[in-house]
Image 1 (cartoon, rainbow, N blue to C red):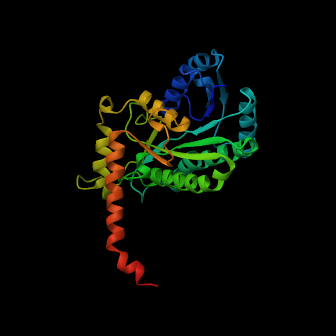
Image 2 (tube, rainbow, N blue to C red):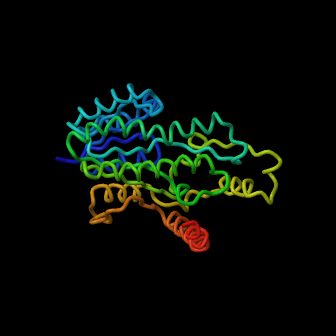
Image 3 (cartoon, rainbow, N blue to C red):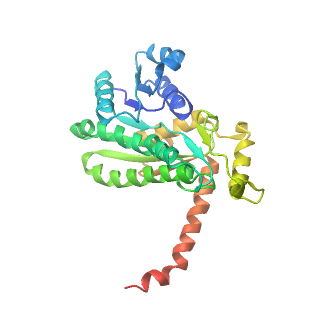
Length: 285
């Protein structure tokens, strides 16, 4: 029997690329989005296939409402082998100036949305002692740039939560995976997926890292970004332990050469910090 997948945030970007790739490979797929009525053509494209279905799922809804959708999805194909928590967006701006309500909204989707969906499906996966939770993080989770304080924090929280969870459920036959995408040819940098808090004068000058980073984001040429279809292939291979993922037992998977470079370089900086502070750490025993 073909593996079955439930994917949040399926109407664009990585979610849509993953849905299309999985359907083409013969996997059973339940795509979800907050407002399916906004994408009738996509719903028809997916639901018209015998191995596809589309459900309405708002990851910021109540746990009870999410439970109902998860149970309905589980019944569609007699179980779910993979949950992909992909729903998310970004808010950029100076850390000092991002309003609290916008920061909380960011966490509601990027962090708590994944937590709710995972908590809803885990009892069902535990009943079968099998399943994989794939949480889509970001290169920002491994290398937070200026302007990304809240967005990166939501992804770091998701990564830490997934890492702890993976320890807790391994003996139950359930696996946790973190995907860290870099820059891909998706709608991530569009106004629908990115909110920008205009910096005040303190952060708007040419010498400000905030202004410099926002300027780079505003002049990005997405044609040079990586291929989301290839990313979908790698995600599936890592999840199913085939192809590039054969025999691979890792928690974090960077995607894109830019992501690998940035995370590797930042990891080196952290190692240098550890080495530089070794005498401080060991002096307290």
